[in-house]
Image (cartoon, rainbow, N blue to C red; front, side, top):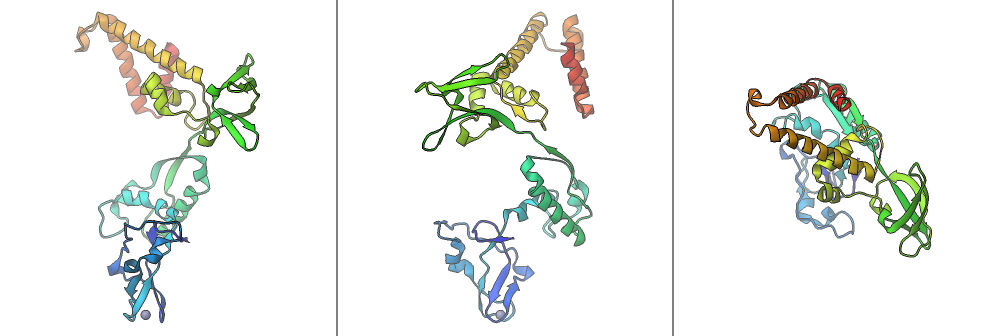
Length: 306
Ligand SMILES: [Zn+2]
């Protein structure tokens, strides 16, 4: 689990010529890294830090060298959440807080976590269980693997592969909006349609949330991304549907304004007109449904009714 990098959890070992690898005594833990190392690309900068390297052997007291390898990042990510349950515990790594909060109710992560972090975190938990540090057997109760957001990608291969932004192209589509052909506006020459792929900086098919926020506002960006597909499903980006979310919010806004015009003073329910009372009742029914059930059934019913 070691790596030859400066910034990581130090491995608390001291190397003595006579006694070999000796653990740092518990009273001297934790080993603290210097924070002013400047990596210059020529290996682990800790190897040049005499103030870090020089120490004495815990067994014989003679000059010794400190271990400069650090632990892989997964060592930290496999257990930090248990420390969060007991952040102020200065007697132990985990304690009563961990017994109370763990296992975690809901894990949210991309599919790449399935073979990396989830595996290591479970392994780590089981070691802690075997050492008697925690009572749990599994760290996570439920897993939600969030879906990817896809967008269309267009490229051309000449000397290397070049990707185009959609706005740089003239794109012909059939009646189902499927791409028939695409040409670059700059030279009128065809480009290759690569289909739906994950958004990527290198493929020029990403969408910057800041642009959406500037054009439509944060509510539209949020509504679109949360409503278009369930969180675990793959989402194909669609500018037209984004416009639809914007129009929907405007309709809600105008509807509210119209009602408010007849009922200018926000106050007690009794001071509301009939329509506003009905709306207020509906809103509170939805609120109750969304806070007391885990499914979105009442929201769906509300949407269907309109
Ligand atoms: Zn020694």
